[in-house]
Length: 439
Ligand code: FHN
Image (cartoon, rainbow, N blue to C red):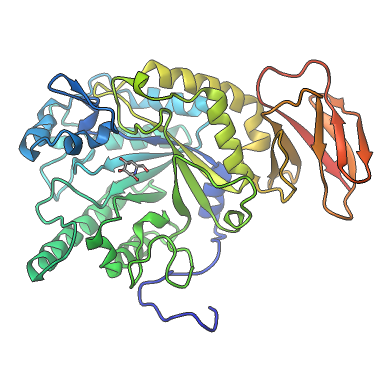
């Protein structure tokens, strides 16, 4: 696009934010549920009496468990308490508008009956098409479904970490065909799927094959031109990931923020679509039996991360790691309950359709502009002891009215410091919002 840009065969497939209805829906959804569910949900971070602190879905790797041993967990996978309708109901009550589920994580086990492998749900005691139950229930509940798919595959014989010779190259090309076939199979079997969330794309083998990531995106879009693909899939001609060597975003949105967020004053991030994903403990995605091993975020911490994300024009995926039997741990149910309560009061104003407000950040919390109503809100997380909320408006703008619940709040203006809004003596015992009208 610029004069000094280099010619790329496998760079960004288009430039700028997508403005079609499907992408607008994704953006308006803002809040999604992430689900990591697989064979790792059975041992839950424990192997032969030892509990590993690392992420439970990586246990096979940390505990150096031989493939044949790990893979035989497939004969134990029997989530007889799984109730897809219940899951969808819980997700809806929590305020989630979309869900992203691991159809295949790094271990290679597939939650759907795949024509291209025996390492799948069909060959477990459960037998049934669990993914179909899931897709149907969530779709029925009005929640958009997305599929997580790991390119990295510890099970597949043709997977390579690097390409060092002709044999690696040949094997990896077979792996690529396998992955592509599986993805097209997923799209064909579950046409409700709105998009794909790729992961496990950091190895040299994948980075050396920008063509593969380019082709996969192209193939998925040929079937459904409006399918939504995260930036993690992609590498360009030079192995540059997420953004190509000309600095253009590859994929439909940036998916690099994992377990952390951009800075509050990061205005660059507001120019693109992006999504952050977050664990409730420090770093556990799949079910881990012992959450006492690391800090577990409170509902208020999570709410703040969600609002901060929305204030920067991003989406937020909150992760759940269901157990092997198909139930959720109590901590997750409790978090869902608290988040859901808050969302039922505030989400229509400051989460769904929430976006960057382009106002100077303040210490008390975050601004959100609702693109549906056009209204501007503040969301308070840090209540000042003075009970005064500072607001600075751009030159030429004046504060007109501040609405808090059913009241109009008093405020004064200081010529050098801006506006100071007086909060009532009793403010809610939870993050709360106020609306500002400017002229
Ligand atoms: O290794 C995975 C990890 O298990 C988890 O799936 C996260 C989710 O974003 N992605 C990878 C680490 O970046």
